[in-house]
Image 1 (tube, helix red, strand yellow):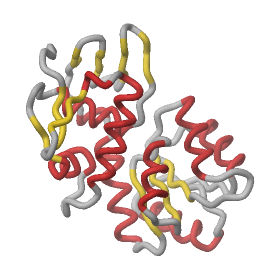
Image 2 (tube, one colour):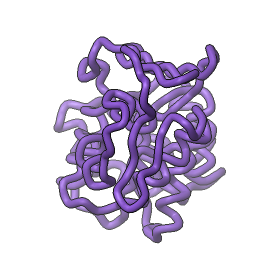
Image 3 (cartoon, helix red, strand yellow):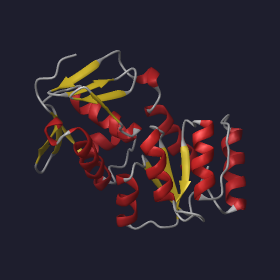
Length: 219
């Protein structure tokens, strides 16, 4: 957990530890990057406003070197802030003040969808794009490409059913685990990020409905 409010960090860490998690805490940007590099965590809870440098810069730096799920936890809850956070590699966004129940539910959801055991023993291909689902690796024209955990899940979900159109609501439920249908901009932001990394042809936009994986995929 990266949080400069000591009281909040202590309370959240205590709750997560009671759920069986091991928790480490950093209070500023430089310490966060160092701690994440040393401990290789399964998940990062990342405050946006930090001493040293902010959470966006922390997210950029860690996503340049590893694919670690990130939940941004911040008092800045505007749509622009959420979109920017998602575009630099965050997997989810939780606004302060929040309930411990909501926080732990989001943590469980992100960890659940990034567990390798949930993936089928499948390699998906679309043109020059290849997704090794069990190993959680993506190649484009033979070059390894770094995707965030959620970006990889989104790409794999669409490519697993080539040509099948998925609505934003369906993607929120199946990829993000949301049940209320909110946050369609989250889907759009992640689609843009995936297209920048693997090429626009891998995901097709169906205007007024949603998205589909490109046809002609083999497993």
